[in-house]
Image (cartoon, rainbow, N blue to C red; front, side, top):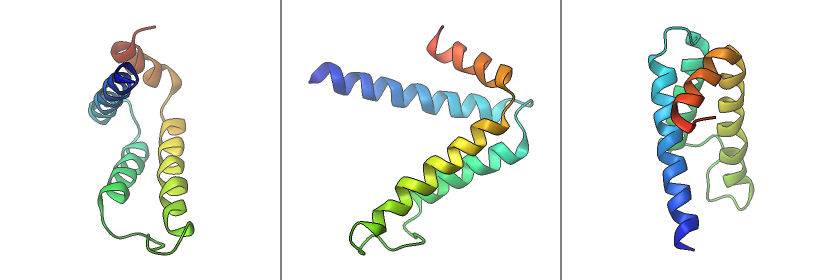
Length: 92
């Protein structure tokens, strides 16, 4: 169990590092950076489109909106730029 949680913590740190590298990379489109910022902001802000106190649906908006924003942001980044940054963090 400890190994599992260590891996999650390590992966989370790596993805945060990747996000920082992509933010600073001049080759990443501004639209992608804006979408990533929106995803982070939506995650951190206490305001939701659908309040969390509404059973099931209240948490579904977080599970749909944030991954969708991240998915679109990554798709806007040229593949070679994303892959280069990804390999620098995670290796091959």
